[in-house]
Amino acid sequence: MIPRFYLLVLLVFTLMAYTPTRALNSPPSPEETFDVFLVKFTNSAAFQLSRIQFPLKSPIILLADDGETEKSFPFTQEKWPLLEEGTFKTERLEQEDGSVYLSHFVIDEDKQKVFEAGFEESEVDLRLEFHLINGKWYMVDGYTGWYGFDLPASELKETVKQVQEDNKIFKELHP
Image (cartoon, rainbow, N blue to C red; front, side):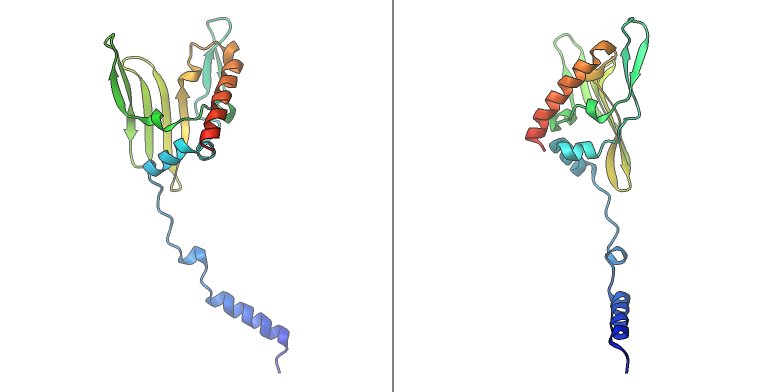
C-alpha cells in the first residue's frame, strides 16, 4: 500500500505536468500602436510619467548668471511639464507677419517617432523623441520651450515651481 503523502506528491507532480502555463500557451503580446499609446500618454498623468525615461537624454541647458556661459541640468521628472492631447496636433499656421508655425512628426517610422513644433527657420519650441522598446512606446528625449536657452539659470527654480503647479491641475483632470 502507498502512503497518502506519496500519493499527494504524485498527484501534485501529475497536475503540474499536465497543466499548461500561461507563459507557454499565450501568444506574444502585440506591439502597442503609437496612436493608442499617444491617447493614453496625453490623457493620464500617471501613464505619461511611467512612459518617460528619466532623466531624458538631453539635459536642460540654460544661460548662466554671467550671461555668457552655459549651465546644464538633468531633465528629471520634477521638471517635466505634462503634455495634453492638443500638443500633438499636426498643423501649419501662417501668422500675420508672414512667419509660419509648424507642428508635425519629423520622423515617423515603425520604431521611432520625433515630434517637433516651432517657427520655420527658427529653433524649435518643442521636440519629443519616442522609441518602441520591447513592444511598448517610451519617450526617451525631449526639449520644451519652458526651459529655453534664454531662460536664466537663476530662474530655473521658479520655472520648475510653475511647471509643477500646471502639472497639479493636469493631474486633477487626467489622473
